[in-house]
Length: 378
Image (cartoon, rainbow, N blue to C red; front, side):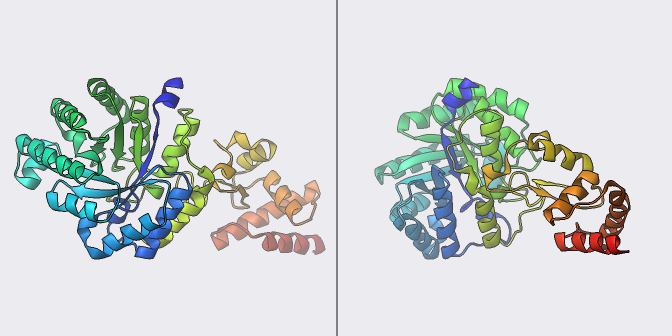
């Protein structure tokens, strides 16, 4: 996929903005500073750090993040109002992202406005940001339900003004990867230059749509850690990064070994545990119980793992449970320094399955050892 390697540029992570907009999530200033530092250490190129218009506390947190001297470009998020742009200029960040609705649904139902108003308003705000000396990017809210001709026309105008990056948002996650790829490829052809995809996960397709956008020529991806965000969340940083590496053969430019720790950090701050089955960073995604799976993994991990757990800071676990087989049991005993004869394995495996069904969890090493020794002495 030489084209993907050539096109892809980097990540703009919005955990501290869109992620914090998840219902009930509120980061403290210390948590925001810690998350920003972890994102920066992982190599994220742009961090959408917050919303200055929220007030003094948010502005203080943004200044603290900037004072740490990250390598990443810090971005202040703004609505399309002069007040928001002025507030962004006041916190001392070098970049501002200004969002404008572009669908007739959002313009009409939410704001009681039309396309002409949107064109005037975003032009005015962009010029204000440039006058402040800010690097300005623009986000097209609800672009997936907007008229593509209008988006193309507006994007061309904003490029000429000096907007450094344009974001196309699938605000309510209604796209699918085949349709989005066709639309976005046409967009890139019509208005060349840096484009960013911002995908929501309402149909569980945010990662697929983000990768499709990269294939279509988008150079930036917008993500959040573990997909934290409004409603069903956003495209997860870790899923997109590993998809880029292993499916599109594009270098994500990140330290992927930091992903497990980063997900835990954000989960603690958000008070939202990472689901066990969460792709890439979930607690069970490298755990194997089924007898045929464990037998295969013991012979060659690649039989049931798409990549080495160490790539994302994880580790492999072989679990002794109801669906375990003789290979699993023999391995569990070996880990305890024990060796069972073939005739011992069958009865012991029956006992293991009974015990696991009663406990509703896998057995611990101590419990396996005790069961074996009890059976051997009987």
